[in-house]
Length: 159
Image 1 (tube, helix red, strand yellow):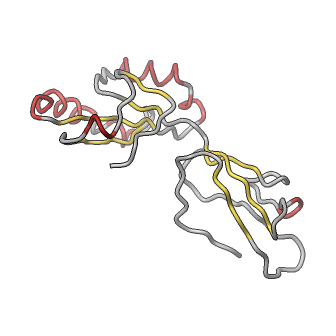
Image 2: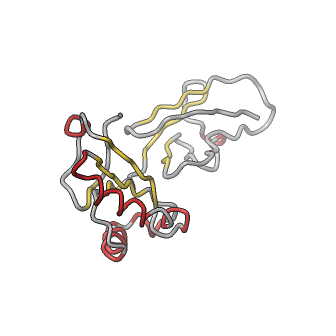
């Protein structure tokens, strides 16, 4: 299990992988406005209560879909109103990146998700347009550096 990186925790002090060794850990990635995230809550709460003494640890990871869901107070209110008692990690921190094209900032070739100096932020799982090459298409060298932990890049597409 990877380390649990979060900008904050509700219902618990920050949990570490080491403290969970030997336990059964169920991690639920959810957001408080998505019906598909809300439907499993009664089951998760029930399992947590029933099997806690047997070593089950339920951890909610709040992964916001909309900007207002990144507001900690809104998450706190939702956790309280939904009567969620197990630990909830708040995963609202954007991850900064910097891209270069041929070893330099992309300038006019920046994409819609990066600035001319090559900087940008990953805020949710989706496709990001980092470079949009202007003029005649030619072979170029592209690099991306993630300036914060928490992002994995699975696919790059060029076209």
